[in-house]
Length: 108
Image (cartoon, rainbow, N blue to C red; front, top):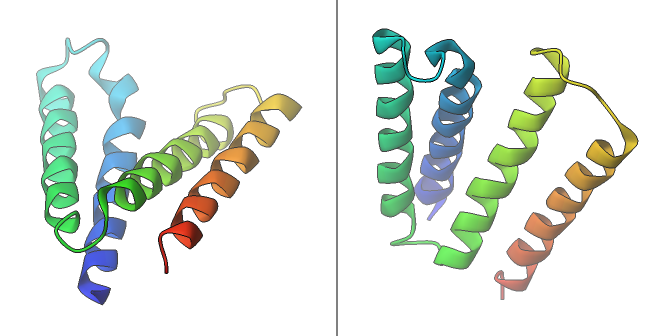
């Protein structure tokens, strides 16, 4: 089962990189970057499908989407120059709490 968690981490990493590269596509008008993003998303979804064979879907998807959303938001604020606000920080904390809560509830 450890391999499933490793594969999930890879899926999340690929999804985060793909999402962070979205601005480079310029609305999907740049063929190279568009291809990189689409292939990245396809790989991430494929890995996610592999993981749900071992980890329940509700846990897998909550972690994949929650961690991905939180990390992309942090990248946006720290690397891409997006505004940092109290509401964003609190919202990110709530995402983390939700993911941890779902993971703990599915751990029995």
